[in-house]
Image (tube, rainbow, N blue to C red; front, side):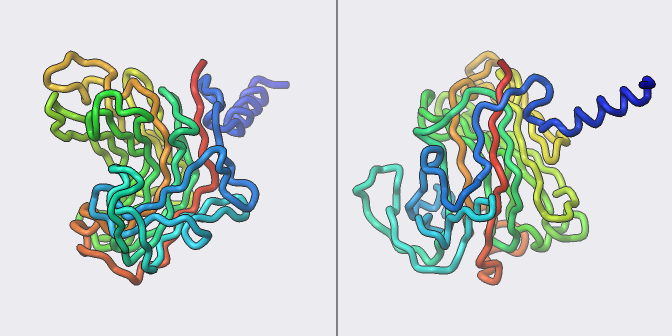
Length: 293
């Protein structure tokens, strides 16, 4: 076998190995969404009308219209439908109720799986339309440093209003993917964030792999294996601290949701919401978490 042949075979083997198995990563948790229902040993449904703390308009509901698994794909769907739930789920299960005009799906691994550092990735297809806000993100399992944003937030994927008018976007239409971390800038808990975006890559089927690599030193964002942003520990240190990994030095759990409306999407692009975007569905082929030994 010639050197060229050996090199070609090696390259073929490398490209056929999943990203989570390259560079020393070892798969520690995954959901391929096989079967015909959500695996409740891995996920918990959200059911509330809290609006995510962002004045989002949906209520999260637990039914096949909003959360379903079929043909190896998870589907979270936002629809127009009167839905009732807790107005403030963070205050406990006995607070006042609220009725919203829209229903959607949200699932999370809180209480079932959380991780400190690693590569977290998902293959997903996200919907568009004014007011449509899909997200794949992480929150601390325990609020070790205090309530939001003191204990941090890692947003692996967010898009808002895909396809809506956008003066600064290629082709004049919204086409950006956002990766963000939220944290406190001082002891008082003043909100700060590091946020970056990149144009949505071209895809024949609309699916892309969204990922972060999270270490004590940095958090790095990727789309389809291409790095587009990086935040280092010095970027999220508080004014009264020396540089260090806090607050991103505690286990975080994973959240998948599809919001409709809210301060961010309603204040951007064409403004407000457009019910013509409904029903809207985020499809997730798989989610994988890998760590280095």
